[in-house]
Image (cartoon, rainbow, N blue to C red; front, side, top):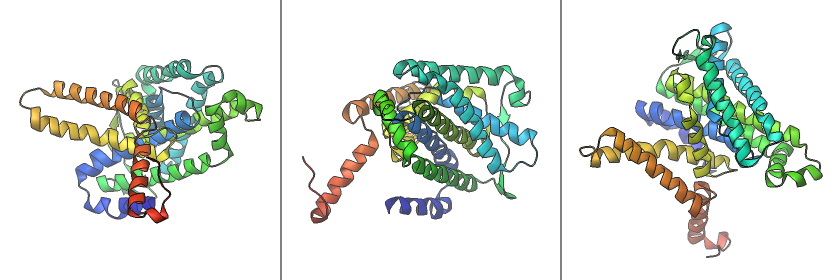
Length: 336
């Protein structure tokens, strides 16, 4: 019920009441990062395969959608979106092959190959950016069935719909036998193999689905948010940002992906405003920005120590205690 109310407000209230700044600079990037976090959570949270190459798949999705639109005139945007995600999925499966032999830290290091290779390819080969020497691309206008999404509110609604549909598809997958296979491989790969879980297919499906979602998130990041992107924007910092989202929000939780994305998007803005107001006359912008990074890093460490399951676990525990206090007869007792 609470999720239904939130979705209704997201469609009915936010586009009408929200300012252009809120829609364009806060909510649209939040949705793109939340979808990317959902993708990484499928791979890392549910399937237990660590990846540090998320930004590479964002870039693949963005540049694939750009080239599909440029080189196949008349291709519907929704088809463009699906094809771009599929191309990212193929690339993800290719770089997921080492997971058949590597685990943990070694697999994380191997996924860095995707990060560096994709950035190198986008910079080295001008074809990907239509022979622009800097590699910068100008994303086309979002248009579906002849309807253009040009204003901040329209781009927000397009992003919201895309994220909502793909999140529901992901939820359906995770509740299927494939989702149970993910968890079995994550918890104990040898035991999963003994009981008949197809390890090869399960791991590659996790990499493919994760990369597909992150690739579509890259399209939203390029087309709906930035509208002008370059390879340098998909660097290792972006991969760590998505990883921090699922750590802070909560591993193996789709709701945690959204909570973590909200934290990562909103908290730096609040720190920036407060820092500029209190210390702007003492320190320059570079010092303030570095201070924000340090504070966020400290908070991540604190979350890992105090609540390894992330903000969503903290939220659920607080909600349960509040509900038990308001209506104890309808709620089981919570141990202190």
